Length: 155
Image 1 (spheres, rainbow, N blue to C red):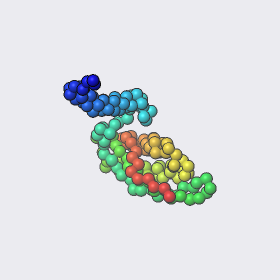
Image 2 (spheres, rainbow, N blue to C red):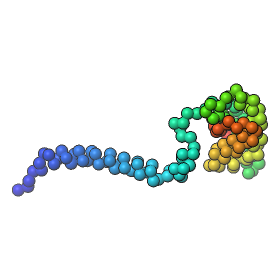
Image 3 (cartoon, one colour):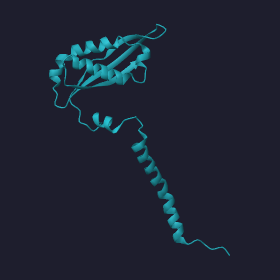
Image 4 (cartoon, rainbow, N blue to C red):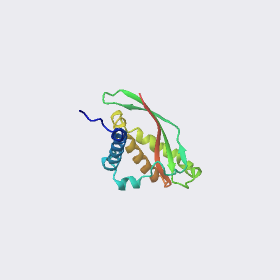
């Protein structure tokens, strides 16, 4: 004669069946975030960049840039890009506005040297941010903290 399973063991296995996937999913998420390095960031690199919780300084939006770029077959493609310059916390946007014509000139001069392949490369946005920030600092606008790309369209 077969034995009937007790009611208490049925309840335990039901609770275990419900909790086990949640525990495994939590462990996988923790392990992926802790050891996966999805973006290749090291803890030192992550600490050196302000995170999304860091309070931004004042931001100065620039007028959009519109220019033509050439591809490898000499065809022209329109590029529209809008940038903003975020200043260090406590920076003064009014003082930075004096540099805006020079910043626009530096950005436009750099953008005109690019071709379509460079703009469509995976590293373009990061490269653009670092080059422009370096050029802006070279203009004397030392309080510029980061370059934001607020719009980017290419046809």
